[in-house]
Each structure stands twice: as C-alpha cells, then as structure tokens.
Image (cartoon, rainbow, N blue to C red):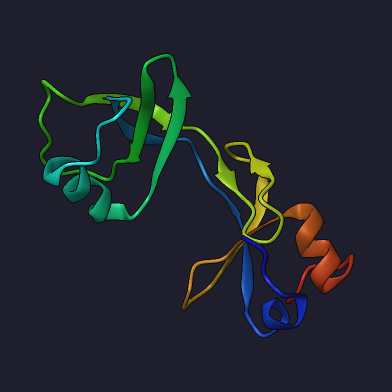
Length: 124
C-alpha cells in the first residue's frame, strides 16, 4: 500500500512502539478456501498473514481475545511479530519507534517515511 505524501500531511500522527501481539495459527492445505470459521476469526481484527509452506499456507490471524477452536487453531504468544509501513511496506520490528494516526483511519509510518513526509523534526 502506498499513501500519497500530501494526503498523509493532512493527518495527525503520534509516536508509538507496537509490541509483538498474540496470533492464532493454523495450516490451510493447497486447494482449500477459507471457511466460515476462519473468516469469522479474521473478521474480528481484519488482519491475517498467509505464509507459503510446503503443501499449503501457514496462516496467522491477529488475536485480541475471544473464543476459538483449540483443535484447529494454536495460540501463538507474540506470534504477530511485526507491522508494515502503510506508505512503503517496510517491516517494522516490535517496539521500534514508528508513527500512527491519532484518530480516523489507521495509518502507520516507519521512521524513514515519517521523516520524508514531515521533515526531520517531529510534529508537535
């Protein structure tokens, strides 16, 4: 995802350090599609990551609580172990200084993109 510099300047950002978060993990074999159970879990946060592995995909779903089928999904403490800059897509490691919108649509910028958009001094 690439955010336009002028659009970003219209938003108000605050510094943040996002910790590693919990995730639910499962395996989706090749040739299968997400079912109602998987879709319901994904809909809670709207975030999932699909990693190709032999025979299918390792699927991580950001987990913020609630019931889940423990026979199908494994709770991975700290498994959601990075974020991505909304502007350039760069990986942001846990607890790394980044910038997030204060309200409205969630936008996350890494340090480099924040400086490219707003200059070397943090916005007050």
